Image (cartoon, rainbow, N blue to C red; front, side, top):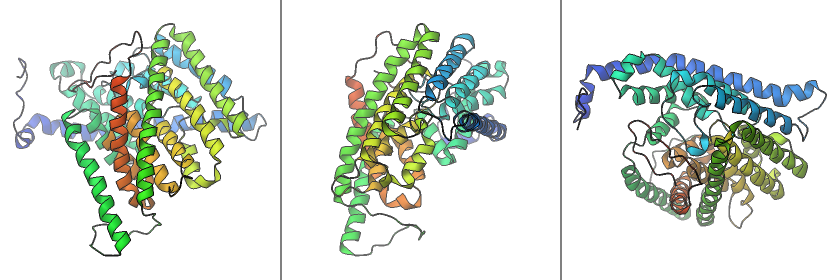
Length: 453
C-alpha cells in the first residue's frame, strides 16, 4: 500500500511511461550521465597517475629499475594511515566498507570528499582493491547533487533511482561496457530477489548444459545445425568433457577459497571498527608484508600482490604457460591474504582482485589431464567473481567481456561455473557464523535485503 502523500504503484509499464515525472527522470539521468562520466574518468586517470608515480616513477627516480621488495612496507603503512584519517575525521567514514558486500546505499554529496580521498590514498599506495566501489559512490553522490535536498526529501523514490543511474554512469568508465554496468546495477538493486535467483539459476544452468551438449555433438559428429554467431576472426578453443568436469570442480573449490577470504575480511572489518586509526595502519603494514614476502619468495615484483591486480591479470593472460605453478601458488596465498585484509580495512572494490585470484587458481590447475589453460582461466575467474560479488549474472557478463572473441566457446562453462560457485558460496555462507560484534548491514532503499551471515 502506498504511503500517504506518495503516488500509488503503477500497474503496468505503459502506465509508468505515461507518467511525466518518470519521463523527466529519464531526461535528468541522461543529462547527469555526462558530467558524472567526465568526473569519473578524471578520478580514474588521477588514481592511475598517482599509482604509476608511486610504484614506477619514484623507484626509477631513486635509482631502482623497479620497486624493490621492501617498497610495499612504507607505502601501505602510509596508505593505512591516510585512509584511517579519512574514516575517523571526514563525513561518511571514507565510504562503504568492501567486506560488507558489493553496493550500498546511495552516497550523500557531503560524503564525497572522504570517499574520494580515502580511495585515492589507499588504491594509489597499494591496497589490494579496485576503483569500482568508490566510482559507484562518486557517481551516486554527484547524481544526487543535481537535485535539491528538499526535493529528495519530498520524493523518496528519487534517491535510489537517480543514485543508481549515477553509479552506472561512473562504473561503466572502468568496466568498459555499459551492458556490464546495467546488469550489475540490476543485481545490486536486488530487483525481484530472492525470486530472481529462484528462476534465473535453473535457467542459467540448463542453458549452459544445453549449449555444451549442442556444441559438443556438433563438434564430435561433424553435423551442421546452423548458428546465429557471426563469423568473427580469432582463435577459439572448443570445450570437451574433461574441461567441463575439471571446470565444475574448480568452480566449487574457488567458491570455497573465496568464502574463506570473505570470512577473514569480515573479521578484519570488525577488528578495525574499534581503535580505527592504529589498527588500519597495522592492516596496511600487514598487506605490505604480504607483498614483500611474495617478492622475496617468488623473485617477482611486489605489485603482483599489491594494487588491484589489473596489470598482473593482463600479463598472466598474455602468456599463462610462462608462470611456474610454485609462483602461482605463492601469488594465490599472499594476494588472497592481502585482499582479505584490504577488504576489511581500506576502501575500494572487490572485482579486479577476485578476477585475478580466480584466474591464477585456474592457470595453476591447467596442468590437470585434459584441462586447457583457457577453460581453466575462464572457469576460475568466473567462479571467484561470483563468490565475491554474489552476483552470478554480472559475473557471467563480465567474464564474457574479459574473454572476448577468443573465449566465445568458453561461455557455456562460464555459465555453469557461475551457478556452481553461487550455490556453493551461499550454502557456505549460511553455515558460517557471523563475526562477534558485527554490525548489521542496512539494506539499500527500495531493496530486499539478503541476510549476511
